[in-house]
Amino acid sequence: MYVHAKQRELEARLKSLFDELDLLLEDEYGDEYPLHPNRPARGEAYNPEADGLFEAAADFTPGFGSELGRGYLVSIRVATLSRVNPETRERIMNSAVAHLRRLLPQRFPERALSVRREDDHFKIVGDFSLGAV
Image 1: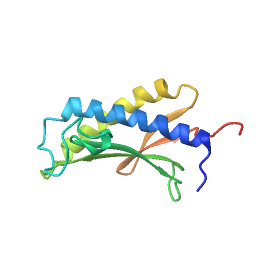
Image 2 (image 1 turned 90 degrees about the vertical axis):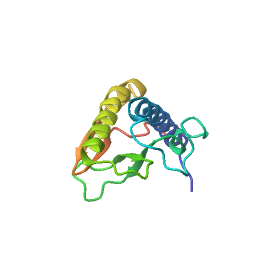
Image 3 (image 1 turned 135 degrees about the vertical axis):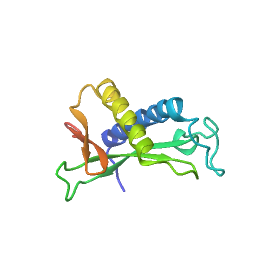
């Protein structure tokens, strides 16, 4: 499948942003739960998504059936066998969203992007156009 170079660049920048978010969450909450026994410790994998307590990622959705339309779903997974209570999960998500709201304008100053809540998830929405191609 062909992916336009500008789309690859956009997604690489998003990946870099979410790698930073992963590290920020590790700094804040990385000691709150025991790590899943099959998961490498923080910094042991090439990809920050694959190690430590958190997996932070952005997953594109075309937004069918969504009032917000297309965008990138914010996915934060806690890699533990322990039960994460809803209050803690909400606190972690709110922290992640606060970081994203601060980082998005820094990493994408040329785009009007925002983080919005829809039902039980958050989504990055806004200008994902590729400009003149």
